[in-house]
Image (cartoon, rainbow, N blue to C red; front, side):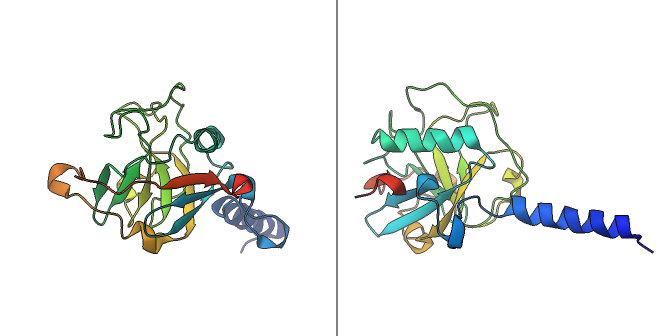
Length: 191
């Protein structure tokens, strides 16, 4: 039998698990925090991304900084693998080999699983090499769990992500004549 303290600890553990699993984008009334929400406009429609500064404060800040600088406007979805993910964010070269003028970021791994709609930071072989590139999951990929930084999640517009032109797994998802980010804005700055 579980004693009073055991039940209290179990209840506290459950409350903490729920609190840390939920996005930190809600303000009073459950409305998204415009300072931590990105509008990613595609040719198909707007994708709304809730950033997770509670999980990855440095990565969330980097995405907001680059967005405010206009870095992502016109950047291609250079690597798109059906059933896996759509990668973008190389505003330097547009082919997946570039980054930004800022230094790479240290990993901010979490226990949040890579499922449909999760936004993760792309990186090279080093866990501490994320810079500007990010990807949006089409489906679950548990092999990424704890290996890549979760920086946010799509809260609306996944139907537009699904329409992004795809490459093939055979060519590592490289897309010829790729779709591009039309414009990306922090919601607080949107006009």
